Length: 384
Image 1 (spheres, rainbow, N blue to C red):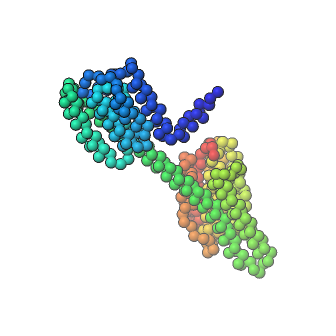
Image 2: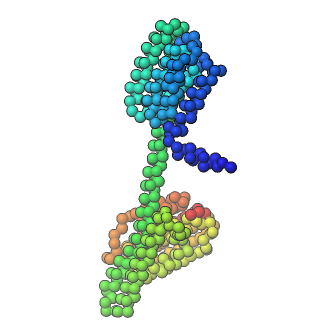
Image 3: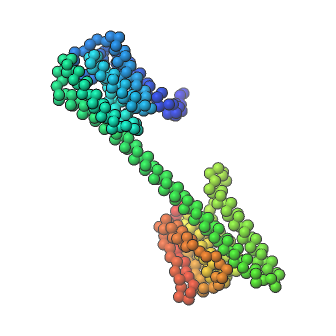
């Protein structure tokens, strides 16, 4: 059996001239049928004349240029118009006369340059055609010529409308593509910020603490080992991000989830931040992307605790409900931030965007004692 889908794909890959040629040939064949002689367009209402040797040239001029009506619309329109004029002056009145409005529609839709000049020249050429038909004994009258001209104008207008519609659709797709690229860049920047900032902040804090442990070799060795481990985790997370961004990667890579919070808290403790972690309930199977956002909220809050309140007690509370996940991370005091790198404010802004995208609520406020608290309510049930 013939695979119609494959045939259709092959046809679409053919050159546009090849695809338009069958219609032009079909119009030639229809014009040669004896039953259709004299039944074509009759501008001027002259008495029909039988076909002669010139009729073949007229048919060729009217029909065959339709094969290039999308490749060279101006050439097609000029040749078809010339053939149409000869057809009416010789009174063949062939079915090929329908090629003129088709050529006008195609030119209106595909002609790129000199559109106004083309309209003016064709309109000017219509006047001598009408005068020549009138001298040949036409009984059409001015009203008939004006009506036919308006019909041709309508054909051009249809083509111009198709052109504007196509241009508007192309512009809409361009805007959608730009918005998609911008959203993807924002997402990538956000992920890199979360991954890099957390690990680098921990490494800076650990390295600064090592400066004061030169007299305690055991503690110094443990601190340097923690720095090494943090660096390795940073490299692993960055490779994980690259795997996610690589379209050719065929391994199923998963994003961090709330189930990895224990590891995250332990890493923060190794960086010298006292963290009390409490979980209530368990994640629902349909939590989806809510777990990922929960992980990022806790990660960013602990990163800020390392930056701005290093050494101050930090409390992490995560509650899993049937329809939402509640997160609260609080730090009691200003701590010491002598060694912490400065922040850009992107982290909290990114968290707010993440939570808002899921229809949740997010807040980050200072406490009366100089600490701060981050709260988030994240609706569950959004598939990743």
